[in-house]
Image (cartoon, rainbow, N blue to C red):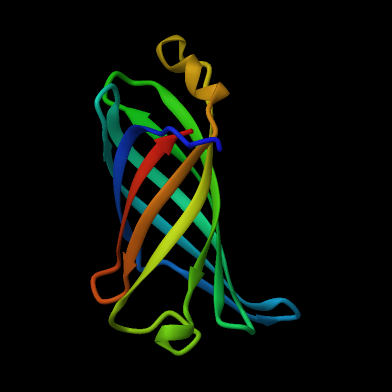
Length: 145
């Protein structure tokens, strides 16, 4: 049987900004667009992130994250990051609450023209994290498969 080997790329800590836009009920569920910013750090890379999440809360209580943003490394490189994932909000009433937390699992991809980081263009990664609704913080560990 095959095993999955992973390599830690970086940890990511983001804060949810107050400038979220609630679109409201749509046929697929409830849509909100949120903005995050923060920092990331790993064995070979570190810097800041700014991103946007086209978040959908489905009628079955599952949240769908659809995040796109830019990593800016400490050496000035720009790396486009996008990830999609699921949050099980059923344990917190089916919608992001004022307090509490929720695990997040995502698939992550990168795009860059920065010579030093070109290998990221070939990486399929996963994110394992948690959002704290009480603090507005999101923390991830991002692993290359």
